Image (cartoon, rainbow, N blue to C red):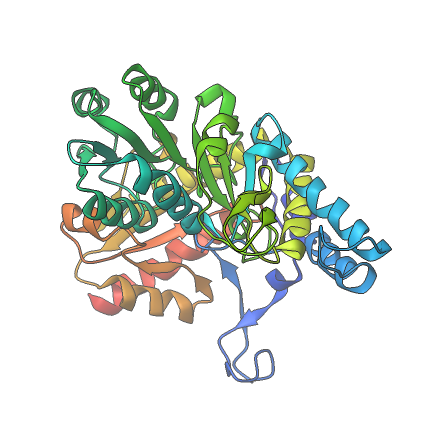
Length: 425
């Protein structure tokens, strides 16, 4: 597939780094690529769930396992020291990428969900109680909504939700009403994984801090797709996942302001995170290691470093511009159909995804038809079931874009949707 369009990035050069994009799909799943029906080029539009991985990142994993595979911080032999240096350098690289003060503010976890749970349990159980409020938004991912909901039940705190209006925008006036002196935490998604809405996180941070509350920013859909500086938005906590930004699965990041993390007790206990142990008591290692119990995500951290290097080479401003261009194009193309409903704000006000439904067709059925055309999208409630209840639909179909996607793939998506329209007419 070759692009003749004018993009802010060199899509052809980027696509060459992703061998999986040359796959054909549609044959025998047990023997992919071998069946006679493997004739449809893969069009991968499920990037909000997981992005593909470039050769450079895979090479960093191979280099680790072939060259210096060893546990970190536990040996004085050469391999352990080399692995430790690389693992610590990954923390430094992440800190630089998001504008943190240093590695002390960067904790490696398994994913965004674990990062949210770490703060909810290590901070929330100790600090929340009856009369306290956690303020969320109506467009929260279950990772945030369910976690804070359950912590509130354990502590007696209450949860309030900032409204999303009919156009998919966050009601900032309602936010100002909800965030008051009883508020202890504001936890907000930065870019909605269903609506594509970009929340005004800096403004929400100001509201939170005016009332001595903290703000937790779910950056799972923002850090991979746009420049994010924790200092500029004044986030107290920020979380994101490596597998949504060209990295491997199994690694997430929790950023926290150093003084807050320092005041928190560990979430998990065991090896690696201790300084001293007696039969009576234990003391904890310095940040960030006190929150990284056991053998950590060594290979994943090193690979995340490589993924960040890859994205920085493209330029995060260019990544954002490319995503927004594709999202607006997809919004415009899909809204050409009277029987397609697209959720969220207009195409020029959203992140790089579009959730929609075809009248009379369940999202799962539409997804199956698109799959027959080689188009990989996501169908379901996207871990935002309460939001879908508010929208009045059980599920939606979501196409999401990244640096290797191009307009011709959106055209193929729209053609496949049109075929579905004819089939169900």
